[in-house]
Image 1: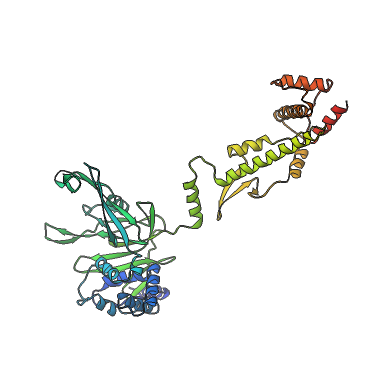
Image 2: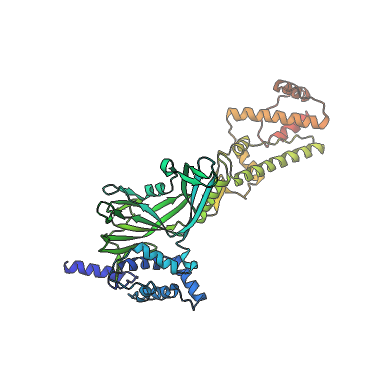
Length: 475
């Protein structure tokens, strides 16, 4: 190693804000899991709350708190921890997963529940269909790497296999208390309570009956950054422990991510990882990964709103705010009709023609057109032509816009004429009931011509209809 490379490594060690743990001989298995616990914020906070409320506790919590307080400032020693765990032969390598569970079993329930889940083994008799549940707490989920000596192994496939329903038949039939006999059955594992931190154990060590000894499986494992667990729970990888070597002589390291970057913890040496994983893909491969630590994904408020909308609203249905807009528009429409009828009942000779925007009505009913739904931080905002829900367009402005529009297509022209004729007939009926609706457009036109002395009714804009009605009456 040249001087420049040595200086770079020294800079990496000094640039980080974390500190290491002294190795007492072969205690890297202990140092690696202790660093994971120290970097798990929920665990350290729960442990600090417990020790502050129980200062005289004789459990391991007090020793862990002292150790973690020291780690915040400098490289420290694990003597009190090894003594509490009754580790006498510090030069003998042990299993990191085993001592991780030993520490949690000695820790207060307030702190250890961060890693504890509840698993149910469900057995169903194929004869009487009786289901039997057996509940049990767990610290980790073991994923078997059997038959993976030369193959790639996927953690995602391992999870699917772990929760897959298996059948027991033939010589493997299970005894059913309800049937009082052996029968075919199905078994399945179901998580009743997902832990805040899920640890996966890749079973790299198994007993080889040919050599009558334990061997290590060094297959390449595809590790995902995000992992979907049954019952629709998503986890994110934030730490993993590697094992190098074999069962009797090996070494453990921990790679842990803080809020931004991954750091490598190798006993007293702590540095930024030379390679920052998961920058390009959701998958990384490793032939040394042994323990995987996944943290529950935090759900943001906006995501919760979107999920609630999808759960509450059935497929094809409008959201509640869209329905509110439709109701408000219908209320405005009915109010205008009532005002017109009241004016006619009061004896007004002038027929007040009210023009309703049929396109607007169609857009409200169909839920399409210029109206849209925009998701934002407050779940969503409903807008119509740039106007947010809760705002209203003044009627005067509405008719002013109509007066400014002096050009109409032929289809709109014909549609207006039909609406005007229907409105005049409605008003004539209210003022005397002298004319009856013949049910057809030609009869309506004939009655209008007779009443008005043969005067031709010309199409007019919204503002011209009242004047034409007055002129027709005077004539």
